[in-house]
Every structure is written in C-alpha cells, then in structure tokens.
Length: 167
Image (cartoon, rainbow, N blue to C red):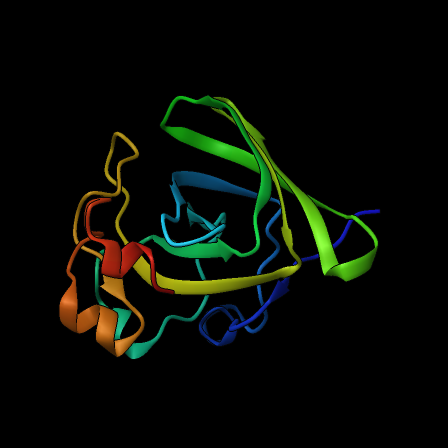
C-alpha cells in the first residue's frame, strides 16, 4: 500500500507552497549516508518553483528550490546505480504495516536506490538558486533559515558534516 511520508518539520515548504509539495518526482543531487547512525539524507531539487517567494528571494536570479530530506532508522539499504547527474527521479513509499515503517524507492536515469525507514521524514536546508545551463547547482544559494543563510552561501562539500548531518 502506498504511503505519503509524514514530514516532521514542513513549515518552510508550507511557507513557500501553501502546503507540502508532492514528492513524486524530483531532481536528485546527492545521497548522504550518516556515519552516526542509520540515516539517509537526500538532497533534491523540487519539481516546481513557488508562485510567491519570501522577501529575501525577491529580485534575485533564482528559479529552483532545493531541500534535504532525512530518513531515520534506515535498514536494508540498496544502491544499485548512482551515476549523477540525475535530472529526474521518481519517489515511491510503500507501507510495511506495523511500527510506522515504509519501503522507499528512488529510481531514474542514473539512480536505483531502495531502503526501509520510519515513515517520518525530516526536512531541512531549504534554499533557492538559479540553475546553471548545464543543470548544476554549484552557485549561490539563498537559504530560507537564518542560521543556514548566515553560515553558507553555497551548498558545502560532503566533508562538511555539520551541514549534511544536521537538519
């Protein structure tokens, strides 16, 4: 049975879109496996840009919203294919019955990822940026949260554990 993951802290997405946008498809930027515990974080570009933007984004050259989704209590991880860039990936989640567990699948050209996790998913590091002609996101990001905005002007590299490990 298909399940919609419960977003633990969707306030930033609700602020932008009026409600949490559907997660059926997105551009997958990164898969981060936590070294502290059984967690997987996906860095994704959402498929649409909000009609109304916050004041801090007005007048800026931005056209894409990016965020991180952190899945907790991950088991049975399988990464059969990872050949970035992944311009479009489909996301499905299937309930496993009890204990609020789900089976997650992310598939697309260049990715085949599967795992089980808790149904609650944490959202963080919401930002806007102007997508480059080659589809890259390495330029300036305008983060929605004050702390992210104060500390970062771009998405840090994978070695920056304080950014990628905390949502």
